[in-house]
Length: 278
Image (tube, rainbow, N blue to C red; front, side):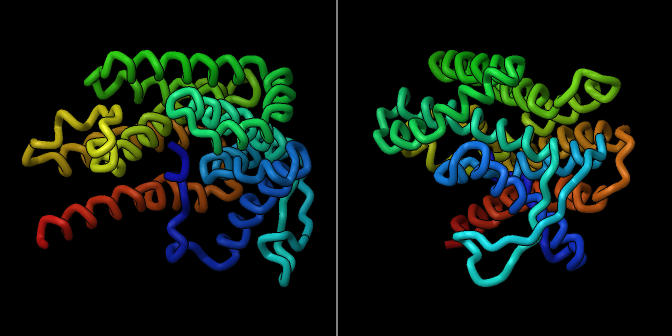
C-alpha cells in the first residue's frame, strides 16, 4: 500500500530536494536508532511526508546533522531530527510490523514472519506509547480481512478503512489541527489504496487476489473514471492541507500532493496503453 507519496524530483529546486532528502534520511536514521538498523526496511515515502507535515505544523526544535550511512558511505548526507520524526519512526515500525504479520497469516510467507520478528519489540514499544494509533492499525488489519473475505466489490469498503487509519496516524496531538489532519489523512489514505489497486490490477487478476477495481475493468472509460475519482480525493485532501497554517516546506509538500503522488498512476496508465498497442 505504501510508496505512492513521492516527490516529482524534476520540479523541485536543488535546495528543496536536499531538504526533502534530509527528512527521508533523518527518518531512516531515527528508525535505525529507535528500532534497530535492520528495521530500516520500514522506511516509507508516506511517513516522510508525515514527518515533514508535522514538523512544519508544530515547528519543533530540529537538529540538522550530516552523516554517512551503509547505503551512502562516501558522502555525508543531511539528516534532520526532531520530535515529529521520532513519532513517524515509531509509526513506521508499527505499520510495517502489522503489515508483515498480515503477509504471514494470509500467505504463510516465512520471509514475512522472519522480518516481523525484527520489528516486534519496536512495534510493541511504539504501540504502548501510542495506544490510539496502535488500535487504529489493529482495527484496520482486522476489518480489511473481513472486506477481502467477503470479496466486497464496493470501492469505499477497503478504501475508507485505509483512509480511517491514515487519518489517525497523521494526528500526533489531539488539538485544534486534528480535524483538518484527519480529513487530509482520510482522503490521502483512500487515494493511496485505490491508486495501488489500479496499479496492481493485472497482478491481482492473475493471482485471484481481492481488488475492488476488477469488476470495473471492462468499462471503456475505466482509466478516465479512475483518474476522475482519484482527482476528487486529492482535491479534498489538498483543501484540508491548505487550511493548515503551514509555511515551511509548503512547496515541497505541494509538489507531492499535486504532482508526485500521481507518478505511479501515470506509469501504470502508460504501461496499459503500450500493452494495448502491441
